[in-house]
Image (cartoon, rainbow, N blue to C red; front, top):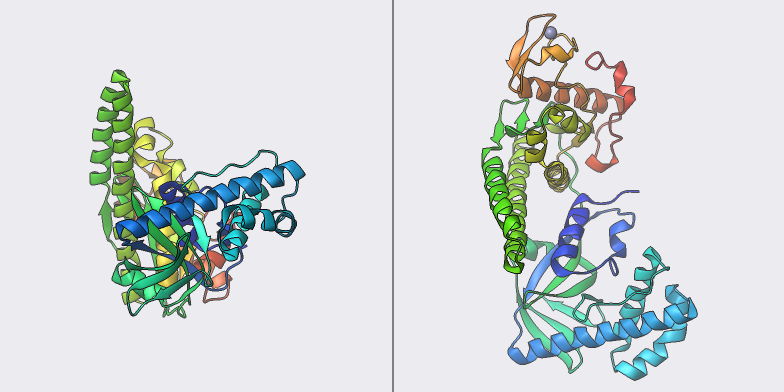
Length: 412
Ligand SMILES: [Zn+2]
């Protein structure tokens, strides 16, 4: 099953940000031919229009609750069956457009798909999906025509250049969300993947703490800023936890969000740069799967905490989708022992790695920065993998290097 990484990333982001719940996001687990990206645009309604949008969300979610009750009472959870028993009643009771009811039925059915053992309820301002029959984009005018409880209204929207470009390929449903007093539309866009252009050569990327990424081309991205911020926030957290009041808890949450945003931003910048470099030199990217990271940080609890594995999963996700979008080949390799193996002679021994920073091969005497050495190994493994699987390869269709790579002279 292929799932576009960005979609996965965005899905999580959107879910937390817009409180979407799991419903209505069936697209995230479907098989994708092209790459699906989400364009986010902010609506700029007048006060009156905002009232109408809010009311629409409230009524639609009330309809969802009604349908959910019906589904629960009848133990009928399929979309088609639920439509049959609930459509007419919901239409009569809530006065929503027929297409909105259809979307509500689908939202409820999706919610029960995940777990039919619990009765589902919906937040009053949860997201509602719209299709082309109830929402029209007028890109040239920078507005949308959207169905609400007071009829169709035209609302201007704002978005960045990148999002505007994405919108040209918009297809299918969009979600109307309410977040922190603002209305957003999340539009699903189909982006064709450009053909990969890779003349040869591969850049190995080693993930670490001191340097977040070290490439086999000799570039590195320092992790100092992230580390400093995490440390600072930890102190902050300790103080607030001692305090234990309600406002302390609120501030704690805020601080955590701030850290998350910072790391996300860093990851976006780093991944962008990595893909840009690979594109410019027409090389492929070789990333390590995340098992390797744990192995290398296993020694020190403090270090492990500083890393936060999730941040690397995110970084890898960003690199992979950006690579796909740019037509850069990206492979994932088994990173086991990459930090203990000499990239010159292939000798693997734990003692090769003298410290966090230094690598000295006990067999051939090769000395190098430990991260740099690992990045060369990752590049080699990526190359081996590429040679084995017919090129060109697209990132998410590549089998990750499993034990099979043990036959490579570089692995042990
Ligand atoms: Zn050696």
